[in-house]
Image 1 (cartoon, one colour):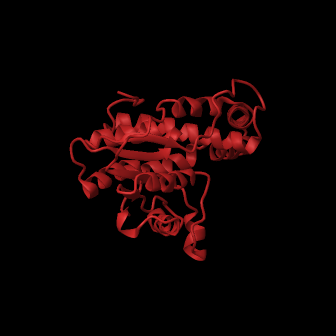
Image 2 (cartoon, rainbow, N blue to C red; image 1 turned 90 degrees about the vertical axis):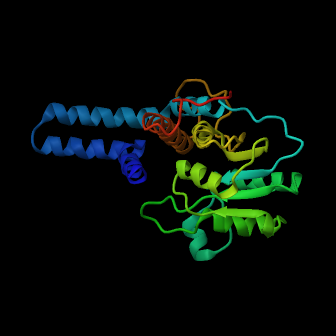
Image 3 (cartoon, rainbow, N blue to C red; image 1 turned 90 degrees about the horizontal axis):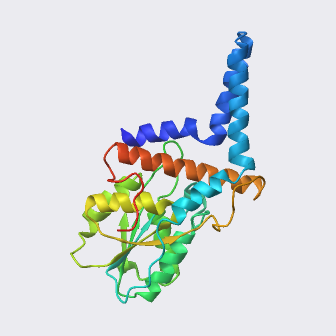
Amino acid sequence: MFFYASKIFWFFIQPLNLAIFLLLLGLLARLVRFRRASLAAFVSATLVLVLAVWTSAGQLALGVLEDRFARPPAPAEIAGIVVLGGGFEGAINLVRGGYELNSAGDRFVETAVLARRYPRAKVVISGGDGSLLLDGELDATAAMRLLTALGVERDRLVLETRSRNTHENAVFTRELVSPRPGETWLLVTSAFHMPRSIGLFRKTGFAVTPWPVDYRTSGREGLGLFRDNQTDTLVASTLAIREWIGLTAYWLTGQIDSPFPGPH
């Protein structure tokens, strides 16, 4: 139920869709001569678009998430690497094959680097079908092709294909690998996604070491207008809003213990 509710809620609340729905609401209010409601809807839509597209507020909110966990010194030895899905163009790969990466593809590039650095470590690819409507190839399937093509032995790869969101990533991965006390496991995911991921893995009792990748901000953006191109600014705003809402929702439902998990 949580999975479906979160997908539906996010469809309406993400900045671009929210602005469109506010504009439609404003037009409807105008047609029925509710002028004040119409004006309020138009002004709200404008504010949403200005903040999300023209200002650096999204980058600042995203930067706070990215700075929460710094990458630690490389351990001498590890038991395994867990990489979370989200780095592949599933719909394209389903039709064309191959392993087309999207903007989160750094997760799998870094995983390949780590797999070569730690040749005895298991590599767990956690990622099922997290889409509500679109058909696509599972990230775990595409990642297996990519990593084996880059020289990672197939018998080192562990595929977790049931998960649809980060909570299920944590639960199903722990069930799959049964980590032993004292083992070191690296968790590879986007830096902005790390606080939520660490909180969820901690809740399952799976102590993982954060290994953030896929940074989207420099940390030097500052607050202002037109600090980046409008497409990247909108993407940053959308990611930041989704992560902060996700953290709040997981905390309120008891799936993480803190509204903003951080280093111990």
